Length: 121
Image (cartoon, rainbow, N blue to C red; front, side, top):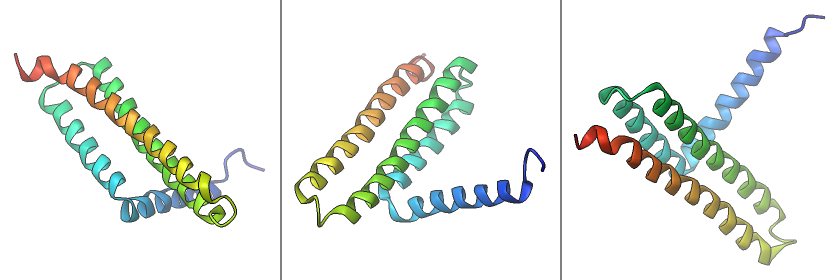
């Protein structure tokens, strides 16, 4: 048996892309965050930021997008449970939204701190 089954690996990638595509189509916030990520990547090349700063920005982009994927996933799960756990559904959704919001806000502040010297010097 091979260590890596190429057929299974390709299938896994297809499922992952399908999940990203679903989230992009159905979640406005994911589309907005993806657009902002694209703008940030373009700015990274325009301003020729350092490698360390680029790594930080890529990690922040991934953090926000992954948290949004987790948020979407948990929202779907919670929606299934809605009839049984009605009050906590709203609380859980608010907490998940807060999680993504804080990550986005923190990323925005760090992005401003990184790009400020490049833009205003």
